[in-house]
Length: 365
Image (cartoon, rainbow, N blue to C red):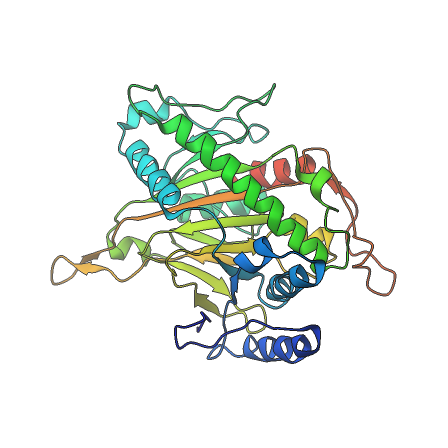
C-alpha cells in the first residue's frame, strides 16, 4: 500500500479545483481496485480549518468524502491536536494498564448500555456475526488478545465512568476527559466537512452529534508468543467494522492495523504515519449515507516478532487509542436526503442507542 504526503516524494492526492477534482477522484478509484496500488488517502486538514470560504472548505471536504466512498479510511494530517497532548494521553494509558490486575478488575465493564469500564484479555471477540452461538464459539476458540478501558461522557445522569483511584493513577481522569473533549471537537469539524462533501448544509450534523454520546477506548496489546497467534482464527483483534459515525484512531509506531480493500477483499496494512490520525467511517454513517460512504472491515494482526529461541518468537507490545464517534443517543438514523439511490433507502430507520447497544450485546460476554 502506498500513501501520499506532500514533500515526501510519495504520490499526493490534493485536488485544487472542482474541475481537476473529477480526474483526481478517478485516479483514486482506479488505485484502490488493485492491491498493488491500494492507498489510504492522506489529507491535510489545516486547509479546512484555515479556510475562509465555502469553496475553500469544499476542496478538502471532497477529498475526505471521496476517501470514505472509495476506501472507508483516511489519514488526517495537520488536524490541530498537538503531539504533546497525544503523547501525554498515551503515557497515562500505559500507566493504567500497568496497574495490578485486581485493581483493574474492580472497574470491570458490566453493561452494554453503559459501555464503560475495564475489559480484560479474552472477554471481547469483535466480529461481523450476529449469531450469539457463533460469537460464543469464536470467543472460546480465539478471543481477541487485548485489554481495553472504555470511557464515556462523564456527565451522563444514568451511566457513570469507572475511574481508578487518583492515588493509583494520578492525572488519569483529568487527562482522559480533556482528550475526550478534544476528540469530540475534531469530530465535529470533520462531520462538517462530510456534510459539505455530501451537498448538505455545513451545520447539518451539529444538532445530531452535540450530546457527545461517544466512547474513548484505550487499548493495550501485550506481548504474545507467536505460535499462540497462529492458531486458527486467533488475532489481536478480529475482522470487524465499527458501529458509529467515525473512529479516530491514534496508533503507536508498532503497527498491526490492516484494512480490507473493499474492491478485492484482501487486507492491506495501514502503516502508522507520525502525526496523523487514521479515521474510518462506521456503520451508522454508512446507514445514514445509504452506503455512499463505506464502513470498511479492518483487523489488528501481530507485527514482526522477535526471536527468543530456535522454535519460538514473541511479538512486541502495542498501544492504540480509539475515539468512537456516535450521533446523539436518540438520533434517528435514516437515509440522508442527498444519498437516495433511485429514490430507495437501503435501511430501515434506527436510533443510535438501539443499534450500538445491540452490537455491544453481541460482542461481549
